[in-house]
Amino acid sequence: MPQSLASAIDGKTSATAKPVTVLIVDDHQIVREGLNAILGEDPAIQIIGEAADGIEGIEEALRLQPDVVLMDVQMPKMTGIEAAAQLKTLLPAARVVMLTMYSNDMYLVEAVRAGAVSYVLKDASRELLCETIKSAYAGHILIRSDMLRQALTGLVNNPAHTNSPNNQLHNLSDREIEVLKLVTEGYSNREIGTTLFISEGTVKKHIQSIITKLGAIDRTQAAVKAVRAGLVK
Image (cartoon, rainbow, N blue to C red):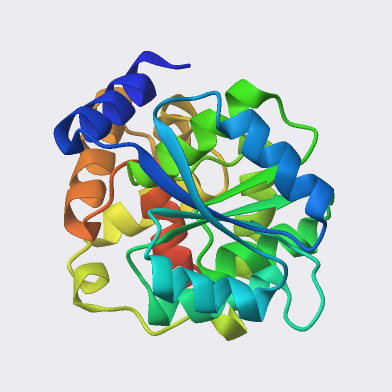
């Protein structure tokens, strides 16, 4: 695990002195049992409930108030993406992590639109799955960089579901908007500097300012937040 991510996660869990509570939502009992067994080995994670579809998942989430909801994408009655969108309004404090067998770009785009903070495949290792849950609780967005870039590109090209920019976004300068747009396209600090003819150090200062103004934790969260709000198109 990267040192910065590990520190952020450790800081959050140490500060609360309690395990991350998780609700598992999946329509296959064998998957739920397997996740219980895998996650149960980590003392920093506590499974507090299960649900077999999106509707039951929302009901259980409202009743149990979990820190993280581990949600399958395709389920009967209501999909995980539809449930995630509702939980974003009904229980905004809960972090939704989509767990799926599908690496389909459109599912990822819709999951990001719905408010999911992470998207992980079911063949992920136990270590990655536990990291994803802890990082989601710590406020980080943990999506593979290539998958995230595809999702952000989809959001930029199809902004119909985004919201109007809020006051935080209006506080960004023209230069910060230019930098943020390149961040959403997957550019590194060096590439951004080359494109805009500014130093890498200046790029870092702009990104830190953007993160602060948007109330984000890192550049990834800032990018997703801006695209969801319709600022970057």
